Image (cartoon, rainbow, N blue to C red):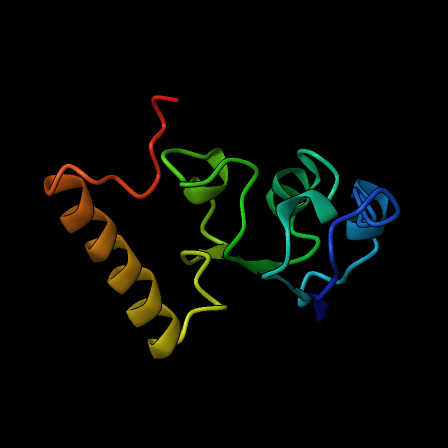
Length: 116
């Protein structure tokens, strides 16, 4: 199993190449919950199609929110939304701020005036 837990920067972009994926066993699992760009562009799809690794589980994609992606058609890919960082207190903070901003806007006092 290969599980990616790296920050994306110039040194880690594409750190997992098509060649490195090809060395994985057909029984291997690749898990990426960090950043999709850690894997070279197109390498994961190519690797899964030939069965090396045999399976992958990801919650990160090159374009998010995910509207369509050919990876989703592969039977050996498990895809979930990118929600690993979420916990209850954070959601309450985000939605509380969003609701306060909406009420301020409706009162004619926008918090973040994008028109300027």
